Length: 288
Image (cartoon, rainbow, N blue to C red; front, top):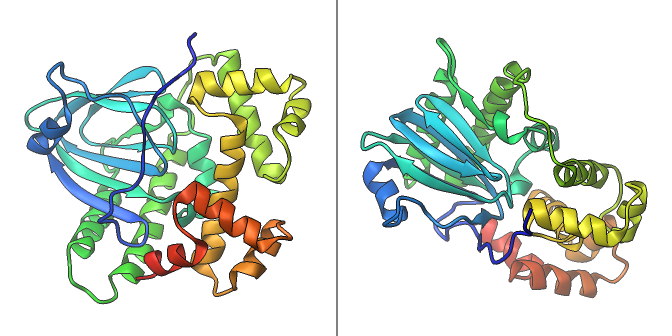
């Protein structure tokens, strides 16, 4: 199996409001992204993607597998998963939503992260999905409005949407999954350990916990995600930092200390290096 290389990583669209971007898509919108050979270049996003298929069928590539998304249903794409739309019927319609990781409550994020690729598309059976459709419609209506309290309303509706989505996934949790490769198993166990131990630990700490070498850990992560252990440690730190900056009024020095950094200037430099903005500019942008 080859290591993933040169896979572009997309950031959220600039039009997002407080870490949420939402659009109603049709076949014409999909055509703008689908290339002449009926596929879009495989890529990764540094945020969550939620797709609600309302009409039509499409083929979606995710984690080295192709899935047919036949309406109606819900698809979630996790941060840094390699994916791409491959093709779509000319009657396809649905909602597209991107969400920054720090906005998702930990207990819901844990459930989403533990979904296998085969479980990430949940097809609506009879009597299912109406609550998700209605909430997505309200989110879209609010997102496109001029309401001065737009960000607050979006956050409330997002919590409802995520809870409804996870309830649906929980209901379908008995979906059978295919056996995983060794690299996939190690990646899964590594991410589990990230939930238990500090992101300030070195990659060698996690390799030792997994009874493998650091180079083998990085190899497995590169095979499955195209990213190193250091990246995943930094990503975990940034997600926690964003939560503290967004949800609290604590100053940056205090937040750095809570996260385990004695030198708050080093923390601020690291935050800017990874995100492209200072902690204070991040707070200002997402609280607009």
